[in-house]
Image 1 (cartoon, rainbow, N blue to C red):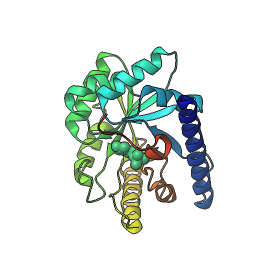
Image 2 (spheres, rainbow, N blue to C red):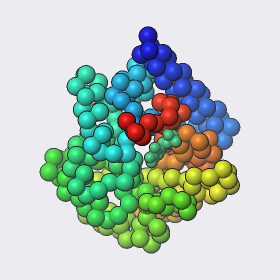
Image 3 (spheres, helix red, strand yellow):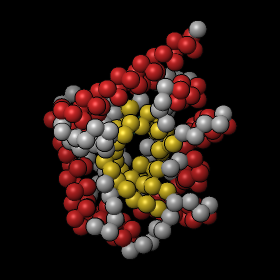
Image 4 (cartoon, rainbow, N blue to C red):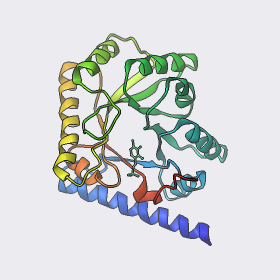
Length: 242
Ligand SMILES: *Cc1c(COP(=O)(O)O)cnc(C)c1O
């Protein structure tokens, strides 16, 4: 009974978010279906992932590798094939596990991480997608701080230094504020940087813009997001004590 209720709520929430995404695509003259939804399941159990999959969701995001490995190994043992993005700050010693379980690492914020991702992917002969996390708002702590530092890394990518890595986009977190203009500015900064990279590095295909969470994804879509990462609005509040 309780399970049925939780399933219904995840399903209803997913339907609502997907409709909101469609509305935003329409109102900002974006092609329908051009924005992908990453369901952020961190701090929620494997059961919640299974509920979301039963409701048609296949793409998930997690920010802690150990938690994600345990959860998604279990889900895959059930014969399911979810796709997983790692979206949180990543330590070097977690990269091996991260590349095993994920199809994309959205939170690449330094060269050393990229080098370790390349090394671990080469070992298992896997090519992984990555996004570069960019610091665009005062309150977030992680991400490349400047276009210059990112450009150093992009040059190495363009030179073919990371054959097992496919850099495909940029990711950011807007500041945690009620100031909508500040949030919008953070998203437009990311889009402008992506547009500049497209011109300066035409050989790389940096197209994706992963931006927008439960509280701000409509603004992100207006500003060009191709991926939104929504947790709370799908799965409910996270219990950090559990
Ligand atoms: C937790 C998290 C989200 C989802 O946040 P909600 O506010 O619950 O939608 C999105 N992106 C990142 C990087 C996160 O860590």
